[in-house]
Amino acid sequence: MAETTFQSVLAALLDSKKDIPQAHLSYYSDLDPKSLRLFLDAWKNVPIKRKTLLLDSLTSYLDEDTIVSFEEIGKALLDDPDSEVRARALGLLAESDDPRLVDALLDIFQGDPDLAPRLKAAMLLGEFVLLGELEELDEKLLHKIEDALISVIRSEENPALRRQALEAFGYSGREDAVGILESAYEREDPLWVASALRAMGRSHDNRWSDSVVSKLLDSDPRVRYAAAEAAGELTIEEAGPVMLKMLEDEEEDDNVTMAAIWALSQIGGEDARTYILNMLDNSDDEDVTEFLEDALENLDFNEQLDRFDMMSLDEDDDLSEFDEDEEER
Image (cartoon, rainbow, N blue to C red):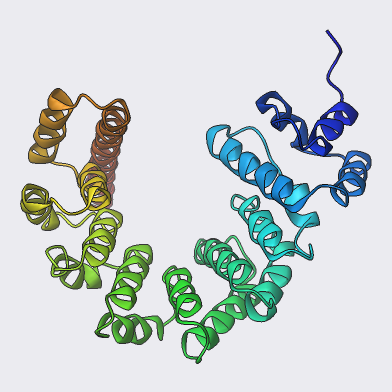
């Protein structure tokens, strides 16, 4: 059996009559400069459908394998002449925290001639806003991103792009974020309300708890879905009983059901555990069963985390009491 080399991997990529072997995908990870040049030379001769097939396969592989990285390919294809390639290249950068990417992302977000790459760039900029809030990104760079997002949110640009910018901006702790999120939430358009709810969830600001809970039983499934996600992100305990009621009535949209179950696994509680276990006992669908098992595992993890936090608080209390006793003595 012939040894697989990167040259043979590229030869297979160029052969459009055959499927791209799954075993070849790992060879595209962590390319050194020489291999990247070979890839880009071959790329010029790959048909567009074959290009998107490879990039979609790499994206799926990236979701399954936490070890691989396709950042070199993603960065190299940001200026590809095809917009679908550019959008997919951005997808390969979803886990990157390289601040050198920010200017390129801003250029695409603000100036790309096609919508798909701009939407992807907005999503990635949101991750950098989060890094900024965690003080893992230069403050000037953070403000530059926030200003760009606000500019698009308040513009007359494509509504989908403005909503994506709003969701990305949700991570921001800037004072004007409150007014921007409130304004979007109060719109009559359910798509804007859903985006506002996602942004509220990302803010990790419990000022939004009542706004989120009030939308859990909304007539529009897109709003219910976003509200469930936000309730989970904000771990709103009051949302638990409402979502259990929501799950009893939910017949229209399986995605809403899954979002509510996952949110319950984030919030926790015995009622949530009982509901998930009952669903697990009655499930005969392999995918649903796997999802419910993941939700149960997530619930266990979050409850252990809560217990650990409580223990830490108790230890702090004990230490403070000890300090007070020492001072008195």
